[in-house]
Length: 175
Image (cartoon, rainbow, N blue to C red; front, side, top):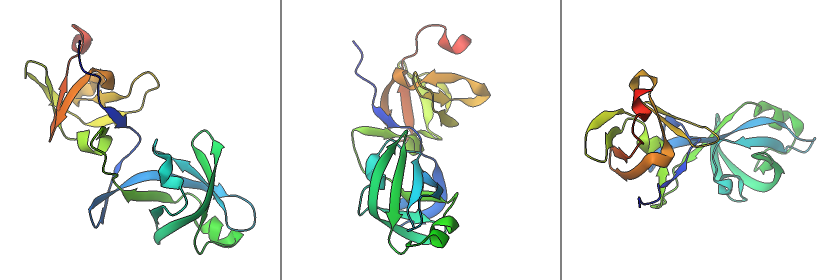
């Protein structure tokens, strides 16, 4: 029996913006203002809800934004208030803003930004390519290799710095 594949936080992309401890990752976007008092609707692009928790610090186009109030509104959306954003005009200026944050340190999670550019090998050590991207998919997120070859994340058996080991079923890569 194979070990369970690592959990993946799948909806992150890296940014060229650097934080003190590494790159800032995209964690959400401001969809639109909500009401007249400065609240906004935030669509998280991460599965980590603590990104919208009170006290969380996100980076917007004009610098740091601290969450002062939040509540989930369904389907990955949150109603959020940021410190200093206290009227409709300020909230409107955030419309469409990409929100970024430093990576969360969690040894039990395989983060997408770590897999991008990693070598992919099968369980015998044969090279299969390099991860070009990770594509979100309802059944299983997919490692995208050069030439468009796809390997469901469920077949990842191990990860060590810069190398993803997979155990795909026979014939998967010949499709």
